[in-house]
Amino acid sequence: MRPIRLPELPIGRRSAAEVFEAGIYGIIKRVVVIGNGFSGAENQCIGLVRALGLSGCHTLYRVTRPRGGINKWLHWLPVSLHKKLDYVMRQICIYSGVQVEAGWSKVVPFTIEKTGLSSVIEADAKQIAMMARDTFEKEGPLLVIASGRDTISVASSIKRCLIYKAICMFPLKLFNCFDFVDLGDFTIQHPRSRLNRFDLVITPQHDYYPLTPHGQRQIPWFLQRWITPRRPPDRHMVLTVGALHLADSAALRSAASVWHDELAPLARPLLVVNIGGPTSSCQYGADLAKQLIAMLQNVLWSCGSVRISFSRRTPEKVSKILLKEFSSNPKVYIWDGEGPNPHMGHLAWADAFVITADSVSMLSEASTTGKPVYVIGAERCTWKFADFQKSLWKRGAVRPFTGKEDISESWSYPPLNDTAEAASQVMKALADRGWTIDA
Figure 1: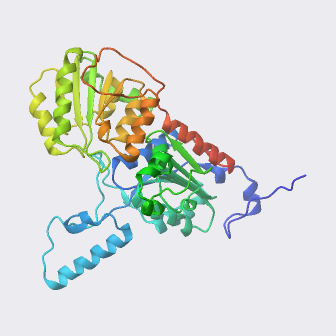
Figure 2: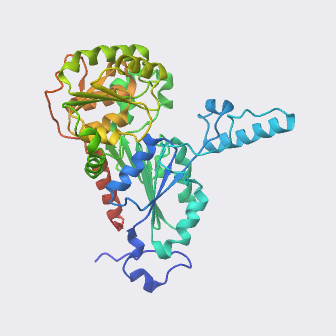
Figure 3: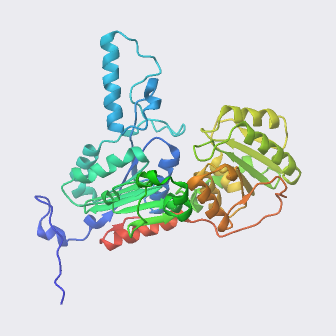
């Protein structure tokens, strides 16, 4: 008979009797989310929390950077070094009598939207680890979920700060780490290197595009050793098609109710147009805006209503061109950023979508609905973004927007279910360690 291996007792914490008492020590009922101030990253964490059944049980911490002045050119530095350099530059300015410009403000949290998150706490690995230790006897294990490049060092440092074992996850966009018994730590978005800092990593398949034959041919031989990731995904990697998000069925039902009075009376079919912004791998400007206008003019006859939304990344020149063209069209409504964001309502009530190819998040959310999704600008995308577009097209989730469509003609496909599938992998990894979630 195989000998039974009893769990180790944390030093000075629990007696032998307590180990065999039922269960608080293996039940997760609280979560710390570590964000970077960007909704695309933080919503992945919160989406995972919801899918795990822990909605309302999380506390949001944020890793912040100095802002203003020359700081906008220093975001490539590690956060800790960036803050130290900012402090030194301030001291030099003070002692030399140079006036620091008003925009060069102290370190402050970014805002996601006007959601009232004024009480978001600055992420500090030592403080979070101390809180986890001090409250463990009463509250049980703590699950930490983080997302974004700036959060990697904090998430991995929490493990080093704890005496006990812990679980660490990092979503990449989801990366997860399990390694402590008293702490669960998940990180979203690929940490790119030293993956052994975490026990579970959740990331989109297209992040491994550099390892494909086509990707390898695009990398000069002398740069190949510097491109990450360098190795194929192993057993502690969970690969998704797109990004995790908040748009689950419960959220969409709620949004349908909240936006009923405004969106239900609109003439059908309702076409929602979501416009992101150019990236280094998907570049466009006024030219795409003019192309989109021509295509929308061609399909307006088949639409009952059109609603256009911009993201915070949308260049002003792009939004101005569209506003000038459609502001007086009775069929078209353009959200100007004022008032409640209708994004979730649009997901719930739209009959079809047109989305710019740059936004993995918006395409992932729309592809969850099972409704027609048309993409504009995919031919401008390169590298892994082109691979992402190809994967959606192969699944039948998206089609290129040509301006020849009849929006009243619907088509369907198996909806993406990345967030729920990732959550099931997290629960399985927890169960393998004898942990459960108090959902």
